[in-house]
Length: 583
Ligand SMILES: Nc1ncnc2c1ncn2[C@@H]1O[C@H](COP(=O)(O)OP(=O)(O)OP(=O)(O)O)[C@@H](O)[C@H]1O
Ligand SMILES: [Mg+2]
Image (tube, rainbow, N blue to C red; front, side, top):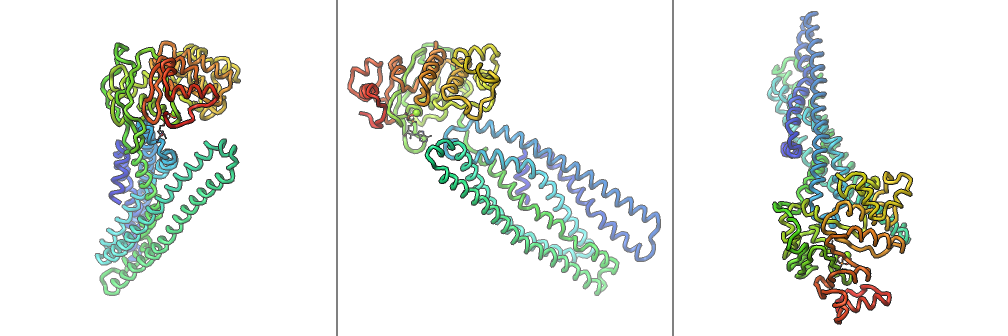
């Protein structure tokens, strides 16, 4: 219990002091709960001996009323302090977690952790917020009450206290075993909850593909199995709890009876006054009431511990180091982008080997090559989605690990193949490129990105809310909005993963115009698929199997035998980069 309280207090950070103060109020509350028992013991002799006076009755009544009033006040203060703390702590934790997630390498999100993050952010945090701290308040008052009960028994007769202590030890031993089983069960439950979240997200995200491949039955089956497993895990948890509770309830009864028996035996041996024995009879069955209530909440306490562990686990994931102190200088003689002997692998296996190139300011370099060759990976290293394993990536002569991420991002704009729009207005989706931009600037960017006309044709114009992921717009429209965002940002370096499919001819020409606007006066690194783009590049880097296998202008590369010429010839014949192996 002590390590658990410690864990909670540590988790609460600066709010721990509120919890500590709440414990004091819980303690006073516990004493007040037991005050009627004490008053009862004081009253019984007067009642039996006939010395009960009106004044004494009044004092008793006042004592009772005062204890109830103090109890109410303490409950209120303790609850306020603790439940309020729950919300404050979780607000801070959410912000901290958001900040932390922002700094994690992209690899963390790719490695199947989405279910975990969703479940931590939703169920775990909400559980702690709504239940956690209140449970803590109750648990503390139960524990204090139990201690007071045992101390009272010791005061009556040391032997009574000892019997109670023995029973309490047995209860605590069972509670410990129960906790162990609860921890195991709740781990399974949480793990299953993660699997379920992942399955539901996967199903929702892939519904289009699932339907088009007529896999609705198969995938629904998978989802149903996950629901069933969650249901089984929850039922197993409850069943195990019931088993343990049976033993505990038997012990509460047997324990109270043992104390009573001991009191009667002591009375028979004249060691305990009859009046006290009668008093005992009235209250003995309350002896283990607090620990009973404590155990009733113990399962929630265990889940709370697990929630804290899982939040801590995510918080402890190592962040992408962002300790750079330098800043990217004004454009000068140094190349705008430079890769120096860069090698990289997502895991153990190296996928980029010794990549080196220098791109001057204002140039447009095209990365081309077969699928899986390493083009996207190369672009991702420039954005620090991952860090290189060997070598250096430099912007204007500065290693990008030596500048703060924010400073690097100020210099980069990215247009991805897959555009993500937030469930927000079109205006806000564009304005996030530069949050301090004026409305005129946002609209100007939209015009340059050829968005203006189609946006104005929407019912609410720029205030139209797009669906999550931008689903209510066509692929080409989404792409143009993302380009408007980049135009507004106006970063000097643009990384462009050229869209290949799903765009009709009209949209394609609009996108081309939008891209030309975006790229005006910028340094460009394009993952290029279209011959037009490629031929217009100032330099082409052919990447295959993680290496730059050819390099030069379009005409230079066409003049030599190699993968590039074969690609262009094949492209003219209607094929693409369909061979993974370099020639
Ligand atoms: N997140 C990832 N985790 C592990 N391996 C990855 C990851 N992303 C890419 N790879 C692997 O790295 C290699 C290079 O992939 P990359 O995506 O850079 O190729 P690409 O040239 O962009 O291909 P495409 O033209 O199909 O987009 C491939 O072998 C790929 O399987
Ligand atoms: Mg790619």
